[in-house]
Amino acid sequence: MLSVDEQIRYLLQWFNEWSELQRSDFLPIISEKYSNKPYVNGIVNNIANVSCQEKPMSLFQCRVKLFREWFGQWNMEQRDIFLKRLMEIDDVFSEKLKHELQNGTDNQEVLED
Image 1 (cartoon, rainbow, N blue to C red):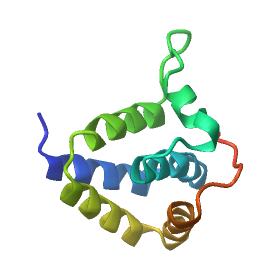
Image 2: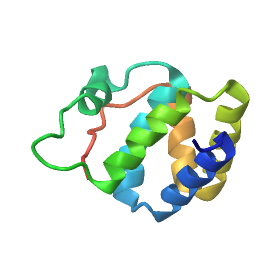
Image 3: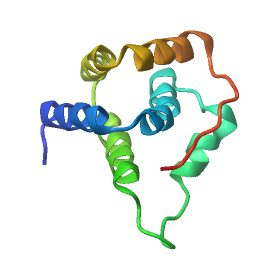
Image 4: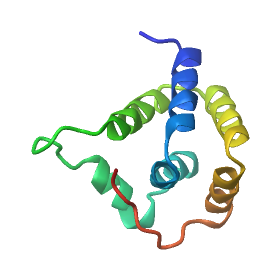
């Protein structure tokens, strides 16, 4: 079992490797976690529950799945540390995330990898 510090390091490393499209796909997922509200009428929740039995999950989907599992086990301080460190990586993503958390969501589409 990984420690929370190791989980955070992995997630930050993965985020650094993601394309702009993948970061855009991650935005509603992380927004939903930090706002505790369903995103765009539950679209993210529905995508999360889609069965991937027909085709294997992509590496990105696996990493998002791990994010969801790990995030649910973190305390508030650990969540704050992750958010702070994530927002230091990408200024554009950081501004988009701040906007989402402060103003709610726009009707953006969620794209799959």
